[in-house]
Image: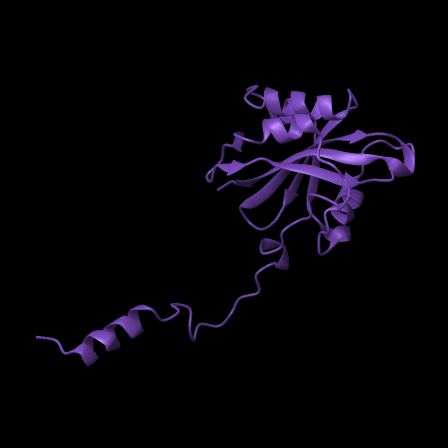
Amino acid sequence: MASDEDYMSFLDKANQDPSAGVPKTNQPRVAKAEFKTTDSGVEIPAPLKEVTQNAFYTSDADEPFVPVALKWDEAGKGLPDEEEISRLINHPDPANAHVEILDPVDWDTQGQYKDIIDAVTKAGKGNDVRVYRISKDGVRVEYWVVTTEGKGSNAKLVGVKALAVES
């Protein structure tokens, strides 16, 4: 019969960090980074609040869609380019971020996210909708489905984003 000390020794060993003593690899900082989805004082449009209540992006890990509402001085350009979106979401290295711009129909080839695209379009009052595929690490990417609301320095970038695990 095992003693209490033997049992405690067993528990201590079982609860040790399995990576203790293993050299740390250089994991990309982006993997742990959480990108900014909202700016203080920027209201999330009602269509986005509604559509994200029960919407999930289907991948190896079904993740919820999250509303996006950021300040964006669009200066007559409309939607941001790859580096500008990286800056807006506080990517740790905007100049070297892996960002791919997609058309919504190319992103949603099966039509399963029509409600998402419609809600983003409604939030932007009919402005163009764009999808940004932003890499976080080897298999984790985020899809940002966004549009602009308003013009000039008072504009906002609004929409939704979801994490996808693509193995």
